[in-house]
Each structure stands twice: as structure tokens, then as C-alpha cells.
Length: 234
Image (cartoon, rainbow, N blue to C red; front, side, top):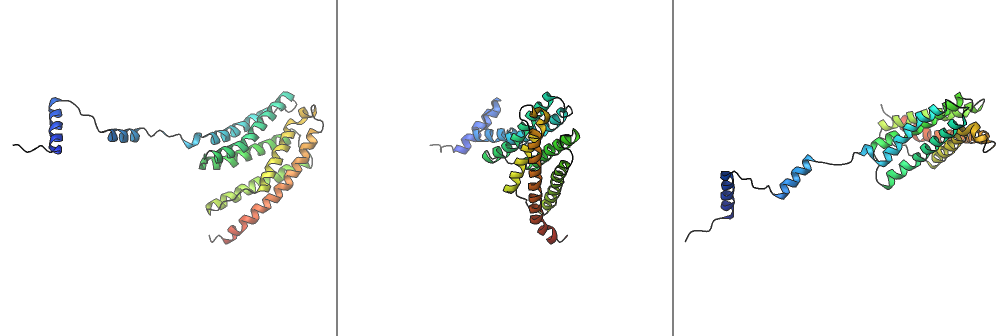
């Protein structure tokens, strides 16, 4: 009685027979799946998350708003610029909320978010000073805000080399809110006066309040970072 053929020998025999007849045997399902996963790693790029797209929108809003403010006498341009500014200011809140809620935080977003904020505020202040919406001693409030932005940016860049983070305080968040509201009133400017008399005066008052908060938060950041600067052995 012949011995039963082993499973390995049977498999080898079937493979040889298939090779001899020119037929192909299908690869195991697990090998096929692994091969497809290696060839088709379909994963959404972190650069195009919703949070980052909101930040990109704020960056695009800067040149649009600047272009509209080149016609400061036109009420239509003023109202359109205000609409663009308000939309950009809303994205300043939404991108952080979306990133935290839906776990879309990324290094790109952390880099671009403060850049977009500073570009929006700086461009707006410069255009408002150029069209004489901000005039006289009120220009000093704009200078204080701009100098603080440069100071904090330089401090953040230096501390980043030391792997030290600079958290945003509650006062800094209030400063940003007051600053954006002040700029909104000033962007409306003469057009806003036709709807709400005293629009520009309200904007200037809030701008000075924002400048005061700017000095406060700027000192807080310097005090928090100065220890690391002094202790740096380099």
C-alpha cells in the first residue's frame, strides 16, 4: 500500500503542474493586500486639513483687503474691506477651534497661524495710517502694536532654538479681540459714520485700549523669556 502524499509534496506537485501547463495560481489574499497597501498608501496630506485651509484663507484676505483700502473714499470699497476683514478675523478663531476639536494640529499650522495674524494686523494698520484714518497721536498706538508684534516674534524665534514654548495668556487673547474689534471700526471708517455716528472715535478708543494691553502682554512675554535668555550658556 503506497504511503500517503504529504501536503507539502502535493502543493509542490500542483505548482509544478501549473507551471508546466502555463497556468497561474492566485497569490494568497494576505500577500495581495500587503502589496496593494505598499503601492497605494492613500492618506490625506496634513497641509490640506480644514484648519490649515482656514489659515490660508486669512493669508489670501490680506492682499484683498489692502487692495480695497486703496480707495478709502469709496463706501463700497470700505464695506467690502470690512466684510473681508471680519471673515478673516473669524477664521482666526475657527482654525484653532477646528484644529483642537478634530485633532488637525500640525507644524505647518502652528507656523502659519501667527504669521497670518501679524500680516493681517500690520497691513491693516499701515493702510489705515496711509489713508489718514489713524492720524496724530493715535499713530503711536499703531506703532506700539507693531513694535510688540516684532518683539514677540523675535522672542519666540529665539526661544524656539532652546526648545522653549511661549504659551498665549488670557490677557493676550483679550488684547487680540480688542485689537480686531478696533480695526473693524476703523476699516469701516467714513462709511461706518453714515450708519453709526462716532464709528471712527470708537475705533480709536479701542485701538488705545489694545495698545495698553499690548504693552502689558509684551512685558509678560519678556519677563517669561528673559530668564531663558540670561541662562543660555552659548
